[in-house]
Length: 433
Image (cartoon, rainbow, N blue to C red; front, side, top):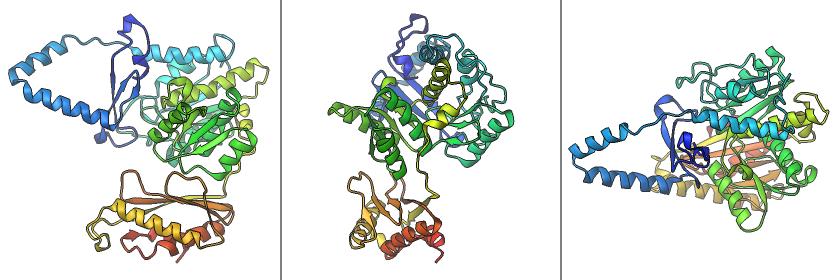
Protein backbone atom coordinates (compact mmCIF):
# COMPACT_ATOMS: atom_id res chain seq x y z
CA UNK A 1 0.00 0.00 0.00
CA UNK A 2 2.78 2.42 0.86
CA UNK A 3 4.78 1.53 -2.25
CA UNK A 4 1.77 2.32 -4.43
CA UNK A 5 2.24 5.96 -3.42
CA UNK A 6 5.83 5.88 -4.78
CA UNK A 7 5.56 3.70 -7.91
CA UNK A 8 5.37 5.56 -11.23
CA UNK A 9 3.15 3.46 -13.50
CA UNK A 10 0.17 4.97 -15.34
CA UNK A 11 -1.30 1.56 -16.12
CA UNK A 12 -1.80 1.01 -12.39
CA UNK A 13 -2.85 4.63 -11.69
CA UNK A 14 0.37 5.07 -9.73
CA UNK A 15 1.62 6.94 -7.89
CA UNK A 16 -1.64 7.09 -5.96
CA UNK A 17 -2.36 10.02 -3.64
CA UNK A 18 -3.18 7.73 -0.75
CA UNK A 19 -3.89 4.11 0.08
CA UNK A 20 -5.82 2.21 2.74
CA UNK A 21 -5.22 -1.29 4.06
CA UNK A 22 -7.89 -3.19 6.01
CA UNK A 23 -6.25 -5.39 8.63
CA UNK A 24 -6.55 -6.72 12.16
CA UNK A 25 -2.93 -7.92 12.08
CA UNK A 26 -2.79 -11.12 14.17
CA UNK A 27 -5.84 -10.13 16.24
CA UNK A 28 -9.20 -11.93 15.82
CA UNK A 29 -11.23 -11.22 12.66
CA UNK A 30 -13.63 -8.90 14.53
CA UNK A 31 -10.79 -6.49 15.39
CA UNK A 32 -10.24 -5.11 11.89
CA UNK A 33 -9.02 -1.58 11.41
CA UNK A 34 -7.52 0.68 8.74
CA UNK A 35 -3.93 1.60 7.94
CA UNK A 36 -3.64 4.83 5.95
CA UNK A 37 -0.64 5.73 3.78
CA UNK A 38 0.60 8.68 1.75
CA UNK A 39 4.01 9.10 0.12
CA UNK A 40 5.21 10.52 3.45
CA UNK A 41 4.56 7.15 5.14
CA UNK A 42 1.94 5.70 7.45
CA UNK A 43 -0.46 8.09 9.12
CA UNK A 44 -0.36 8.46 12.89
CA UNK A 45 -3.12 8.98 15.44
CA UNK A 46 -3.40 12.80 15.00
CA UNK A 47 -3.76 12.38 11.21
CA UNK A 48 -6.45 9.71 11.56
CA UNK A 49 -8.34 11.76 14.14
CA UNK A 50 -8.30 14.68 11.68
CA UNK A 51 -9.63 12.46 8.85
CA UNK A 52 -12.47 11.15 11.02
CA UNK A 53 -13.47 14.66 12.11
CA UNK A 54 -13.47 15.92 8.52
CA UNK A 55 -15.49 12.90 7.35
CA UNK A 56 -18.04 13.43 10.12
CA UNK A 57 -18.41 17.10 9.14
CA UNK A 58 -18.85 16.25 5.45
CA UNK A 59 -21.42 13.57 6.26
CA UNK A 60 -23.33 15.96 8.49
CA UNK A 61 -23.45 18.69 5.85
CA UNK A 62 -24.61 16.56 2.92
CA UNK A 63 -28.30 15.83 2.48
CA UNK A 64 -29.13 12.12 2.35
CA UNK A 65 -30.18 12.25 -1.32
CA UNK A 66 -26.96 14.00 -2.30
CA UNK A 67 -24.80 11.49 -0.42
CA UNK A 68 -26.47 8.58 -2.20
CA UNK A 69 -25.72 10.25 -5.52
CA UNK A 70 -22.10 10.74 -4.50
CA UNK A 71 -21.81 7.05 -3.53
CA UNK A 72 -23.18 5.98 -6.93
CA UNK A 73 -20.76 8.29 -8.77
CA UNK A 74 -17.83 6.95 -6.72
CA UNK A 75 -18.74 3.32 -7.43
CA UNK A 76 -18.65 4.01 -11.18
CA UNK A 77 -15.08 5.32 -10.88
CA UNK A 78 -13.52 2.17 -9.35
CA UNK A 79 -10.67 0.47 -11.22
CA UNK A 80 -9.36 -2.89 -10.02
CA UNK A 81 -5.62 -3.49 -10.54
CA UNK A 82 -3.17 -6.22 -9.52
CA UNK A 83 -0.69 -3.95 -7.80
CA UNK A 84 0.71 -6.86 -5.75
CA UNK A 85 2.47 -8.11 -8.90
CA UNK A 86 4.20 -4.74 -9.30
CA UNK A 87 5.28 -4.70 -5.65
CA UNK A 88 6.52 -8.32 -5.77
CA UNK A 89 8.47 -7.71 -8.99
CA UNK A 90 10.41 -4.96 -7.18
CA UNK A 91 11.38 -7.48 -4.47
CA UNK A 92 12.49 -9.95 -7.15
CA UNK A 93 14.57 -7.24 -8.85
CA UNK A 94 16.29 -6.40 -5.55
CA UNK A 95 17.49 -9.99 -5.07
CA UNK A 96 18.64 -10.30 -8.69
CA UNK A 97 20.61 -7.07 -8.36
CA UNK A 98 22.31 -8.28 -5.14
CA UNK A 99 23.40 -11.46 -6.98
CA UNK A 100 24.92 -9.61 -9.93
CA UNK A 101 21.80 -9.59 -12.13
CA UNK A 102 21.48 -13.39 -12.30
CA UNK A 103 17.97 -14.37 -13.45
CA UNK A 104 17.49 -17.18 -10.90
CA UNK A 105 19.97 -16.57 -8.07
CA UNK A 106 18.08 -18.88 -5.67
CA UNK A 107 18.03 -21.87 -8.02
CA UNK A 108 18.52 -25.03 -5.97
CA UNK A 109 17.73 -23.37 -2.63
CA UNK A 110 14.79 -24.99 -0.84
CA UNK A 111 12.85 -22.29 1.02
CA UNK A 112 9.54 -22.90 2.78
CA UNK A 113 7.09 -20.17 3.77
CA UNK A 114 4.44 -20.24 6.49
CA UNK A 115 1.96 -17.41 5.89
CA UNK A 116 -0.36 -18.50 8.72
CA UNK A 117 -3.35 -17.89 6.41
CA UNK A 118 -2.50 -14.20 6.39
CA UNK A 119 -1.52 -12.01 3.43
CA UNK A 120 2.01 -13.36 2.98
CA UNK A 121 1.23 -16.31 0.71
CA UNK A 122 2.11 -14.21 -2.36
CA UNK A 123 5.79 -14.46 -1.41
CA UNK A 124 5.99 -18.07 -2.66
CA UNK A 125 4.62 -17.69 -6.20
CA UNK A 126 5.53 -14.07 -6.87
CA UNK A 127 8.97 -13.77 -5.23
CA UNK A 128 10.68 -17.07 -4.43
CA UNK A 129 9.67 -19.12 -7.49
CA UNK A 130 10.64 -16.44 -10.07
CA UNK A 131 14.05 -16.41 -8.34
CA UNK A 132 14.37 -20.16 -8.85
CA UNK A 133 13.79 -21.39 -5.31
CA UNK A 134 12.17 -24.74 -4.51
CA UNK A 135 9.14 -23.98 -2.32
CA UNK A 136 7.53 -27.39 -1.71
CA UNK A 137 6.37 -27.76 1.88
CA UNK A 138 5.24 -24.15 2.15
CA UNK A 139 2.05 -23.98 4.15
CA UNK A 140 -1.07 -21.99 5.05
CA UNK A 141 -0.69 -19.68 2.05
CA UNK A 142 -4.40 -19.04 1.45
CA UNK A 143 -5.78 -16.02 3.32
CA UNK A 144 -8.33 -16.94 5.98
CA UNK A 145 -9.08 -14.41 8.71
CA UNK A 146 -10.26 -17.15 11.07
CA UNK A 147 -6.67 -18.50 11.19
CA UNK A 148 -7.58 -22.20 11.25
CA UNK A 149 -4.00 -23.47 11.67
CA UNK A 150 -2.21 -21.08 14.03
CA UNK A 151 -2.01 -17.39 14.82
CA UNK A 152 0.21 -15.73 12.19
CA UNK A 153 2.64 -14.17 14.63
CA UNK A 154 6.43 -14.71 14.71
CA UNK A 155 6.32 -14.24 18.50
CA UNK A 156 3.80 -17.07 18.96
CA UNK A 157 5.44 -20.34 20.07
CA UNK A 158 2.92 -22.51 18.18
CA UNK A 159 3.54 -20.55 14.98
CA UNK A 160 7.31 -20.89 15.32
CA UNK A 161 7.01 -24.63 16.01
CA UNK A 162 4.99 -24.95 12.78
CA UNK A 163 7.64 -23.33 10.58
CA UNK A 164 10.48 -25.23 12.31
CA UNK A 165 8.65 -28.52 11.66
CA UNK A 166 8.11 -27.55 8.01
CA UNK A 167 11.82 -26.81 7.57
CA UNK A 168 12.95 -30.07 9.19
CA UNK A 169 10.31 -32.25 7.51
CA UNK A 170 11.21 -30.90 4.07
CA UNK A 171 14.96 -30.66 4.73
CA UNK A 172 14.76 -27.06 3.57
CA UNK A 173 17.62 -24.56 3.53
CA UNK A 174 15.54 -21.80 5.08
CA UNK A 175 12.10 -21.17 6.54
CA UNK A 176 10.25 -17.84 6.48
CA UNK A 177 7.22 -16.92 8.57
CA UNK A 178 5.11 -13.76 8.32
CA UNK A 179 2.52 -12.15 10.54
CA UNK A 180 -0.92 -11.49 9.08
CA UNK A 181 -0.28 -8.23 7.25
CA UNK A 182 3.41 -8.94 6.56
CA UNK A 183 4.83 -6.02 8.50
CA UNK A 184 6.66 -8.54 10.71
CA UNK A 185 8.64 -11.64 9.86
CA UNK A 186 11.12 -14.19 11.17
CA UNK A 187 13.21 -17.02 9.73
CA UNK A 188 14.53 -20.49 10.59
CA UNK A 189 17.84 -21.98 9.43
CA UNK A 190 18.28 -25.49 8.02
CA UNK A 191 18.88 -26.95 11.50
CA UNK A 192 15.60 -25.53 12.80
CA UNK A 193 17.22 -22.71 14.74
CA UNK A 194 15.15 -19.53 14.90
CA UNK A 195 16.06 -16.09 13.63
CA UNK A 196 13.56 -14.11 15.66
CA UNK A 197 13.64 -11.65 18.55
CA UNK A 198 17.27 -10.84 19.52
CA UNK A 199 18.69 -13.30 16.97
CA UNK A 200 16.82 -11.63 14.09
CA UNK A 201 17.99 -8.21 15.25
CA UNK A 202 21.56 -9.53 15.47
CA UNK A 203 21.35 -10.99 11.95
CA UNK A 204 19.88 -7.85 10.43
CA UNK A 205 22.46 -5.73 12.28
CA UNK A 206 25.27 -7.86 10.86
CA UNK A 207 23.89 -7.45 7.31
CA UNK A 208 23.33 -3.69 7.64
CA UNK A 209 26.69 -3.04 9.33
CA UNK A 210 28.48 -4.78 6.47
CA UNK A 211 26.81 -2.28 4.14
CA UNK A 212 27.11 0.73 6.48
CA UNK A 213 30.04 0.26 8.90
CA UNK A 214 29.66 2.01 12.26
CA UNK A 215 25.98 2.86 11.81
CA UNK A 216 23.52 3.03 14.70
CA UNK A 217 20.97 0.24 15.21
CA UNK A 218 17.80 1.43 16.96
CA UNK A 219 15.80 -1.19 18.90
CA UNK A 220 13.02 -1.28 21.47
CA UNK A 221 13.61 -1.38 25.22
CA UNK A 222 13.49 -5.15 25.89
CA UNK A 223 16.51 -6.20 23.82
CA UNK A 224 19.25 -8.05 25.67
CA UNK A 225 22.60 -6.87 27.02
CA UNK A 226 24.16 -9.64 24.91
CA UNK A 227 22.78 -7.98 21.79
CA UNK A 228 24.39 -4.67 22.76
CA UNK A 229 27.76 -6.41 23.19
CA UNK A 230 27.33 -8.17 19.82
CA UNK A 231 26.43 -4.98 17.91
CA UNK A 232 29.06 -2.79 19.52
CA UNK A 233 32.00 -5.11 20.27
CA UNK A 234 31.77 -7.65 17.44
CA UNK A 235 30.13 -5.66 14.65
CA UNK A 236 31.54 -2.22 15.44
CA UNK A 237 28.17 -0.51 15.39
CA UNK A 238 26.25 1.45 17.99
CA UNK A 239 23.17 0.09 19.78
CA UNK A 240 20.56 2.72 20.63
CA UNK A 241 17.95 1.06 22.83
CA UNK A 242 14.71 3.10 22.81
CA UNK A 243 11.04 2.59 23.75
CA UNK A 244 8.57 -0.18 22.91
CA UNK A 245 6.28 0.46 19.93
CA UNK A 246 7.49 0.08 16.35
CA UNK A 247 6.48 3.65 15.48
CA UNK A 248 8.57 4.93 18.41
CA UNK A 249 11.59 2.95 17.21
CA UNK A 250 11.23 4.11 13.59
CA UNK A 251 10.63 7.75 14.56
CA UNK A 252 13.71 7.68 16.79
CA UNK A 253 15.88 6.40 13.92
CA UNK A 254 14.53 9.18 11.69
CA UNK A 255 15.26 11.72 14.46
CA UNK A 256 18.84 10.49 14.91
CA UNK A 257 19.50 10.90 11.19
CA UNK A 258 18.05 14.43 11.31
CA UNK A 259 20.56 15.45 14.01
CA UNK A 260 23.55 13.92 12.22
CA UNK A 261 23.74 10.43 13.77
CA UNK A 262 23.60 7.87 10.96
CA UNK A 263 21.06 5.09 11.56
CA UNK A 264 20.06 2.59 8.87
CA UNK A 265 17.99 0.04 10.81
CA UNK A 266 15.12 0.39 13.28
CA UNK A 267 13.85 -2.93 14.59
CA UNK A 268 11.62 -4.14 17.41
CA UNK A 269 11.96 -7.46 19.24
CA UNK A 270 8.54 -8.42 17.83
CA UNK A 271 9.96 -8.58 14.28
CA UNK A 272 8.94 -5.10 13.10
CA UNK A 273 11.97 -3.97 11.09
CA UNK A 274 12.39 -0.83 8.98
CA UNK A 275 15.31 0.26 6.84
CA UNK A 276 16.38 3.72 5.75
CA UNK A 277 16.91 2.37 2.22
CA UNK A 278 13.24 1.28 2.15
CA UNK A 279 11.73 4.63 3.22
CA UNK A 280 11.51 3.49 6.89
CA UNK A 281 8.62 1.17 6.09
CA UNK A 282 8.20 -1.75 8.51
CA UNK A 283 7.94 -4.29 5.70
CA UNK A 284 8.44 -7.92 6.73
CA UNK A 285 8.78 -9.06 3.12
CA UNK A 286 11.59 -6.57 2.46
CA UNK A 287 13.33 -7.71 5.65
CA UNK A 288 13.33 -11.29 4.35
CA UNK A 289 14.59 -10.07 0.97
CA UNK A 290 17.70 -8.79 2.79
CA UNK A 291 18.28 -12.38 3.98
CA UNK A 292 17.71 -13.74 0.46
CA UNK A 293 20.17 -11.16 -0.88
CA UNK A 294 22.78 -12.58 1.48
CA UNK A 295 22.11 -16.16 0.36
CA UNK A 296 22.24 -15.18 -3.32
CA UNK A 297 25.37 -13.01 -3.07
CA UNK A 298 27.17 -15.67 -1.00
CA UNK A 299 26.54 -18.23 -3.74
CA UNK A 300 27.77 -15.78 -6.39
CA UNK A 301 30.96 -15.41 -4.33
CA UNK A 302 31.42 -19.18 -4.25
CA UNK A 303 30.12 -19.71 -0.70
CA UNK A 304 27.26 -22.16 -1.18
CA UNK A 305 26.45 -23.47 2.28
CA UNK A 306 22.72 -22.75 2.30
CA UNK A 307 21.54 -20.89 5.39
CA UNK A 308 24.91 -21.47 7.12
CA UNK A 309 26.05 -18.08 5.83
CA UNK A 310 23.24 -16.52 7.90
CA UNK A 311 23.85 -18.69 10.97
CA UNK A 312 27.54 -17.79 10.91
CA UNK A 313 26.67 -14.10 10.96
CA UNK A 314 25.18 -14.36 14.48
CA UNK A 315 28.06 -16.46 15.84
CA UNK A 316 29.16 -15.00 19.17
CA UNK A 317 25.78 -13.56 20.19
CA UNK A 318 25.45 -14.13 23.95
CA UNK A 319 22.01 -15.54 24.68
CA UNK A 320 20.56 -15.80 28.20
CA UNK A 321 19.76 -19.16 29.74
CA UNK A 322 16.55 -17.69 31.18
CA UNK A 323 14.34 -15.06 29.55
CA UNK A 324 10.84 -14.35 30.88
CA UNK A 325 8.16 -11.69 30.70
CA UNK A 326 5.78 -11.38 33.64
CA UNK A 327 2.75 -9.10 33.41
CA UNK A 328 1.71 -7.22 36.56
CA UNK A 329 -1.83 -5.89 36.14
CA UNK A 330 -3.20 -2.80 37.86
CA UNK A 331 -6.73 -3.11 39.27
CA UNK A 332 -8.31 0.19 38.22
CA UNK A 333 -11.21 -0.30 40.67
CA UNK A 334 -8.95 -0.82 43.68
CA UNK A 335 -9.31 1.82 46.43
CA UNK A 336 -5.52 2.23 46.45
CA UNK A 337 -5.81 4.21 43.20
CA UNK A 338 -7.92 6.79 45.07
CA UNK A 339 -9.82 7.64 41.89
CA UNK A 340 -6.62 8.41 39.97
CA UNK A 341 -5.47 7.00 36.64
CA UNK A 342 -3.70 3.68 36.27
CA UNK A 343 -0.90 5.57 34.52
CA UNK A 344 -0.19 7.73 37.58
CA UNK A 345 -0.29 4.63 39.77
CA UNK A 346 2.10 2.79 37.46
CA UNK A 347 4.52 5.73 37.47
CA UNK A 348 4.47 5.66 41.28
CA UNK A 349 5.38 1.96 41.22
CA UNK A 350 8.31 2.68 38.90
CA UNK A 351 9.52 5.56 41.10
CA UNK A 352 9.45 3.34 44.17
CA UNK A 353 11.45 0.65 42.35
CA UNK A 354 13.96 3.23 41.15
CA UNK A 355 14.47 4.54 44.70
CA UNK A 356 14.93 1.01 46.05
CA UNK A 357 17.49 0.09 43.40
CA UNK A 358 19.61 3.16 44.17
CA UNK A 359 20.01 1.91 47.76
CA UNK A 360 21.07 -1.61 46.74
CA UNK A 361 24.80 -2.06 46.00
CA UNK A 362 24.12 -5.34 44.14
CA UNK A 363 22.01 -3.59 41.51
CA UNK A 364 23.01 -1.03 38.89
CA UNK A 365 20.51 1.19 37.12
CA UNK A 366 21.15 1.59 33.38
CA UNK A 367 22.90 4.95 32.82
CA UNK A 368 20.95 5.56 29.58
CA UNK A 369 17.34 4.39 29.45
CA UNK A 370 14.25 5.76 27.72
CA UNK A 371 11.48 3.63 29.18
CA UNK A 372 10.69 2.23 32.62
CA UNK A 373 13.39 1.09 35.04
CA UNK A 374 16.19 -1.07 33.61
CA UNK A 375 18.63 -2.62 36.09
CA UNK A 376 21.62 -4.99 35.88
CA UNK A 377 22.56 -7.49 38.59
CA UNK A 378 23.48 -11.13 39.28
CA UNK A 379 24.87 -11.41 35.76
CA UNK A 380 21.53 -10.48 34.19
CA UNK A 381 19.05 -7.62 33.99
CA UNK A 382 15.41 -6.66 34.39
CA UNK A 383 13.17 -3.99 32.90
CA UNK A 384 9.90 -2.92 34.48
CA UNK A 385 7.88 -0.55 32.33
CA UNK A 386 4.34 0.71 31.94
CA UNK A 387 2.39 -0.64 28.95
CA UNK A 388 1.72 1.87 26.16
CA UNK A 389 -2.04 1.26 26.25
CA UNK A 390 -3.12 -1.07 29.07
CA UNK A 391 -3.13 -1.01 32.89
CA UNK A 392 -0.19 -3.42 32.97
CA UNK A 393 3.44 -3.26 34.06
CA UNK A 394 5.36 -5.85 32.00
CA UNK A 395 8.52 -7.15 33.70
CA UNK A 396 11.24 -8.61 31.48
CA UNK A 397 14.03 -10.61 33.12
CA UNK A 398 17.08 -12.20 31.51
CA UNK A 399 19.71 -14.06 33.52
CA UNK A 400 22.41 -16.74 33.22
CA UNK A 401 20.41 -19.13 35.45
CA UNK A 402 16.95 -19.59 36.96
CA UNK A 403 18.46 -18.91 40.38
CA UNK A 404 19.82 -15.53 39.25
CA UNK A 405 16.52 -14.67 37.53
CA UNK A 406 14.67 -15.43 40.79
CA UNK A 407 17.03 -13.11 42.70
CA UNK A 408 16.20 -10.27 40.30
CA UNK A 409 12.48 -11.04 40.52
CA UNK A 410 12.60 -11.12 44.32
CA UNK A 411 14.23 -7.67 44.41
CA UNK A 412 11.42 -6.29 42.23
CA UNK A 413 8.77 -7.99 44.38
CA UNK A 414 10.19 -6.57 47.61
CA UNK A 415 10.23 -3.08 46.09
CA UNK A 416 6.63 -3.05 44.83
CA UNK A 417 4.73 -5.29 47.26
CA UNK A 418 3.22 -2.34 49.15
CA UNK A 419 1.23 -1.35 46.05
CA UNK A 420 -1.91 -3.36 46.80
CA UNK A 421 -3.68 -2.55 43.51
CA UNK A 422 -0.85 -4.27 41.64
CA UNK A 423 -1.44 -7.95 40.90
CA UNK A 424 1.96 -9.52 41.67
CA UNK A 425 0.73 -13.13 41.52
CA UNK A 426 2.82 -13.95 38.40
CA UNK A 427 5.86 -12.54 40.17
CA UNK A 428 5.27 -14.41 43.43
CA UNK A 429 4.72 -17.63 41.50
CA UNK A 430 8.00 -17.18 39.64
CA UNK A 431 9.88 -16.42 42.86
CA UNK A 432 8.23 -19.39 44.54
CA UNK A 433 6.77 -17.50 47.50
